[in-house]
Image (cartoon, rainbow, N blue to C red; front, side, top):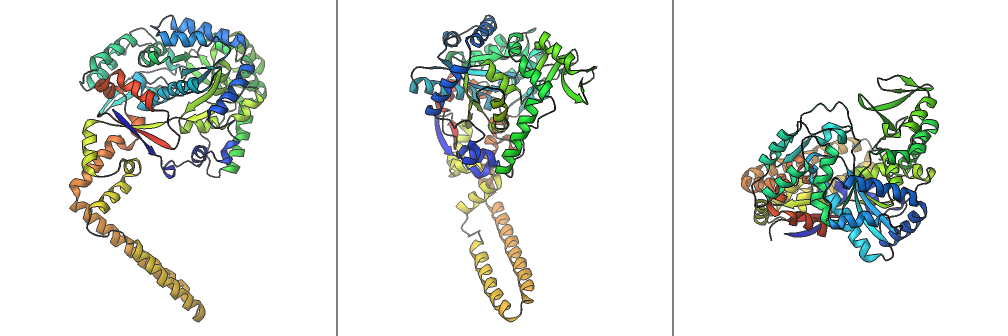
Length: 535
């Protein structure tokens, strides 16, 4: 395998806030505590140690010890769990939903990236220990988002009525047909049997999806010391009782995040909130699943259940905190109260809603972590690698728009000048001269000139498009070749990392694939990782 880092075209990101975050622009600095650097991590580490108590560490270690008592744990992960009891140990965290068989490739990249970051921090910063954490969203109830996985042309779907349950609590009693479908879709390379063993050991009938996901991810990343956290535990919820109560009594999350959204909109005119706050930003776990809590005048309604007074609801929170579940906006605060965390790594959409929360953290007296954008990656297989070599097109052109790629390819092979830019410029200059003359003679001619200019420019545009279309027919074979390469990197016009599962790549390279990604994934935010599977 070999890799290269391609500069990211920020104009293609399409989100001004994230573009400015990547550039470390002043307009985003007020919505983060600090940008990622060893120096800022060190500063955050010192502050977090003062804030994170021995009691919080004790609860974390107790719950992790219990969780891993049912998992075959590597020496490296066991060591990191023990390290977390040390007051000098901090964490770097990423999280994701409980997608079956790990879901799309970006999940692999996120986990590999936090491991790579901690490896770097442990080498560069003395006096502290850093542990990589993967936070599983076991309380999420959006089953549709986690219930399918794509292996090249094959889509494997888990058809189940989840009854709106937290997905982590769903038992795998009808899952073996899904396992068979996944195995049958994996290309039969050297390490397919190894992957099938990992699947069989993780996804067992009667287990919950949380338990299966922990075992599966652990089997891939345990050798790198990854610690997985399932936060759906009563002990963790008890530590969040006051925050649940504040949401009922003071609408803390709603008010603070709404205020921050308004501030961001003033600085970033194009900003649209990734998540809009609700009047109550946590759920109640009921016999009918995970249900929203809504304000109705002075009462609170839990979807189809009875209405409660604030006193009734607070009494339930204090008595049974495990029956309450933070939503996507409260979850970051919940996470940072449980973990000795200094950095959160996420994708663009995640960072957008984290940047809505800094004020909420401040008013909750919890340190806001340093945010880090996860690395985006693309994988080139043997077949695509050969096509790429024949195309004579630089790989960077395949990360833009398909239409732009096709035009670039035609321009590189056509003997004609397919761009009418110079003609359009000459035409515009001529009309500018005519406008100056018209203004001095009769200003009423200007409107007619403008209309004529627009008509002639459109005529040139139409001719240019017809010429390009004709050349596309003349070079159909070459165009289809670059389209095929583009499709392998953007299947169904979706970036590979958001669509394809890692299974076929693991089948081809085995654990070496995972280890290689861990080694190469920690690159600057303005670059894209490209992995070529061929040596």
